[in-house]
Length: 139
Image 1 (cartoon, rainbow, N blue to C red):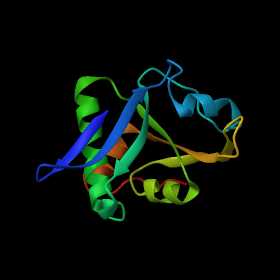
Image 2: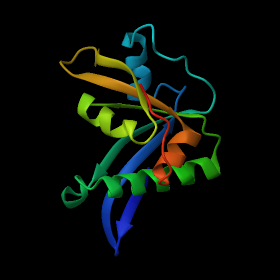
Image 3: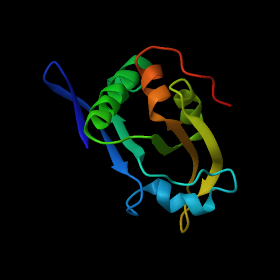
């Protein structure tokens, strides 16, 4: 779990968790993601629970900067190959700017009425995109 401060004020948090321990929403949803879902590999992580203070939620640059800081830290402390996340369809379009691709849409969370879009991106292109370099266009 990471926290983000600006001028001494906590403005957001994010959680990055390794996949393979049964701790993530991505792992719960993967069996329902269909045939296009990639198989997990060593070095896969889930990025989730990104929360920004209300005054920063519509600021794409704040989102980019916070995600970039968290990814840089994670990559400097552990092998990170790919990043997975679950989000709404609208947010999946935003994350496409950062090198993620949707591989499953409307994936139901068993026992609830919730459904998610599942996204994935290789750490290096995502990091490049977050640093301001163009991301390869996802499909």
